[in-house]
Length: 69
Picture 1 (tube, helix red, strand yellow):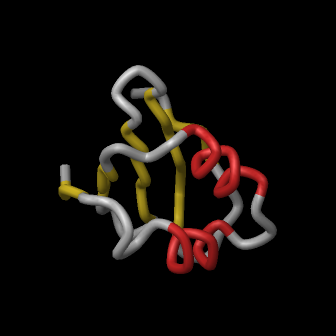
Picture 2 (cartoon, one colour):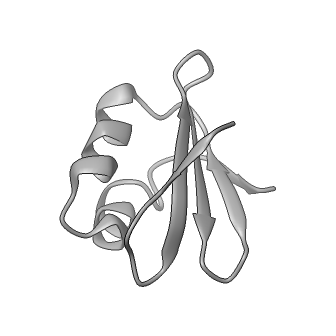
């Protein structure tokens, strides 16, 4: 999955596969996580958010299944 670099104190890059609705987040510490069944509007939201990390905490963590890659 192609990820786009973002400016964040915690997140290095974010990618999304619309076919599988999988959101992939690479953290600055090197960890990569995939979140499953994430709608397109959530990906659009995190990409346009003023704070990617805050959006992740408020709208994604705890709301979607995930796995460390």
